[in-house]
Figure 1 (spheres, rainbow, N blue to C red):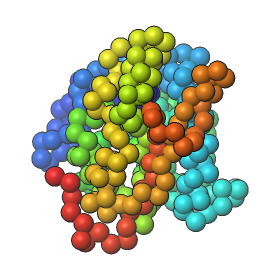
Figure 2 (figure 1 turned 120 degrees about the vertical axis):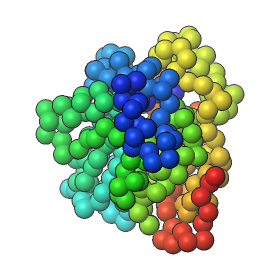
Figure 3 (figure 1 turned 45 degrees about the vertical axis):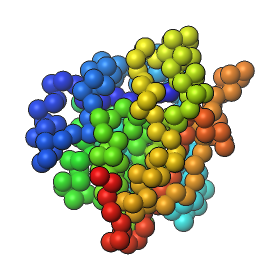
Length: 274
């Protein structure tokens, strides 16, 4: 239901250059659509007002879940101290920045250069330790990077190739590490909520923000990632109470959801998704 920014047309040349195969996970149409909104990310009363309310529930869940699944105490002063964390499609850092305050060595990457500039400026103004980079995940794969935790929230439904994107994310997770995907389930209710409701009736999002056919079910996500060496640890829905206008994380998976995977220590018998 929520937007994720992508690269501007001016960046397309470097996208192609960064990918040895000439392929890219970025979708140029999505790039052009959201680049201009970068300055709105940190305005809680602006275009991303709904995103901020949604984000509070999402960050609260991750702040408890990530330490727990990493064998750490969420009550510690820096529960993710020493952990390398990557946020792919970080926007202007509204998830990256609070997680960086938990002690992780945190890098956010985004396909929109303006998002990265806004995120960097906000982190400097608030003394957040998050770092940002204008990049696609396949660029980091080509560099041989690996992280203990990789996040990609509300991105997969906007990419040019889901298998290629998930393969890039999978390659960036260290053995035993965590991969968290947040996206939209492809159900009749998600069409009503995310397309008809959010785009046409409530106008929380511009019309055309989402293509329901590109939504990914939890089962499809698992089917993509299991052959790449991942096991599902938990799946949680992110739901809106329309009476109180409050978001919460629970068991309902009809629209937005979060799925947490762990990479197996050995993936030599696994085969990539083609």
